[in-house]
Length: 306
Image (tube, rainbow, N blue to C red):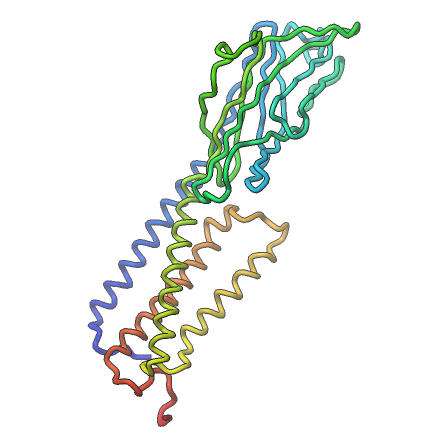
């Protein structure tokens, strides 16, 4: 296909401008994604005679508004046996706002192991990619004597989130001192979980490309109906076939890596983006060429055809 009436310098300048935008978005996305993967687990410092409680999120289930994870505890040295590894007495951790694992028991004379829990959140997935989910849970730690009596321990609760595509920030719930009741020794996990900058950037770029592709398809249909373009234009058709062949191929990777993995950010997404941009450029060139054709002289028609 030869493009007529379009200066080559103008054509190359437009293509290089598009490539520059794509490369810039690529670099910014990689930097943002890499920064979001840095470990941010806070150090556990139990209060004197108390317990530090860490909730480590395993996933963000935006559809069900739940965050599953593990609860780990770091008791003060006074709560350990002489071996420094096993507890003198059972420690019970009670969690409000938990869908499962509301009461966790760490038995005496056994090594400490993290225990699963699922916290409920407040958020709306319909706001994607700008949706966020607030976690507010009251944490109470108690030790239980062999006779069944319990004692509330001083508690310091924190949350860690090391998930690709998500970031967490502290929220400010109502201070316990402002609530009725005796809250001495208890603490809250209060975090707002939202999608990372890289996820938002990719979503916005994809939505923009989809909109451009839809507009280009409508224009092609209009020019075909008006007779400026023939029904067949192989370059655009070939690119469309490549696009729909690439998406199923993504599901064949060994181990079934989840969407949003490094390989998607590094390569898969950008191959899809390149194909879509190439389709838009080819369609744009066809339309530009068709503007200089008279109705009835169809692009894509066979030489000598009607």
